[in-house]
Length: 137
Length: 230
Image 1 (cartoon, rainbow over the protein chains, first blue to last red):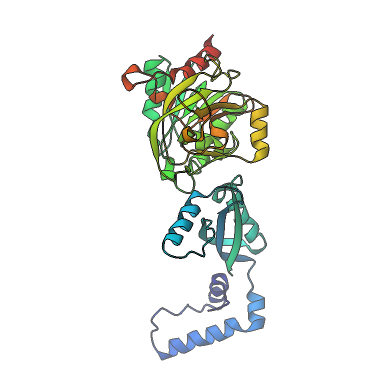
Image 2 (cartoon, rainbow over the protein chains, first blue to last red):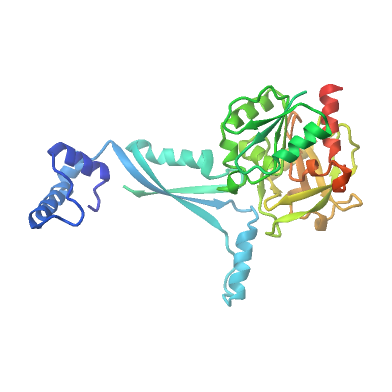
């Protein structure tokens, strides 16, 4: 179902009364049916028509220390790498990331919403910056 | 004067704070549950030490978003007294009542030891009964106590006389070796703009009885009692 969001599939199933094929497949005819649905859903005009107002989103948020904020953990990691013989290592800055999946969201607001997550909780603006990456859709 | 000690999941100095205020100072003291939205009439709120929410995300970050914190912030904005000790200090920074943040100790290790603190100002209800330059011996127990803020904030803190305590040598001099966690400008405790909120990493409540080796921590509470009752 590459390129088709969950909402589109649900919507299509709802519209046409076609049950989503059960995993494992119940026989040749149902597998053929699945392929047909897939062909139908991935056709460009259909996709445009089904493009949802609401989306289920997958986002990856990176949070990392601002320049100038001391990162003793990164320093320790850098020196450990050097000890292991990787003498080319100049510096290491340690950060973290969050993989987030959401329920239905108004498509246009999605990215802004994730930025709000960052400002309100995921990052501390005094010491950290963040970057939002929308993975899907 | 009524005292409230906020209890978060993972607080572990809440009973120390209760003992400090109720038994040692004889003040009516109540625990306040983090999910409540009522300070139960407390005039003074203590955010105790510990590891609220297991230090998940960042120290104090989750506790700062707990329901009770709306009330604590409102109390502080009205000029009410709030002290955050250790994890409580981290919570105060996370919720924005105090500027800056507490980073991992410079040594990367958890530090559990006595430190020496110099009283840097007497111009606050939290320090008024002490002498400027007085040296206190008080324990610390933290992994993330390395105070940090940007240069403008530091400039403002200094200009507004809001640095309450600094890590010093036993003789009271600034010495990087005695600034054990690597805090910016050896800062151990800071005050809010109106001086009604104090955040500090060391534990004055653990240094308030002869039995435990030091009573230097009592000065903080005596100051505030003087300010409220005197």
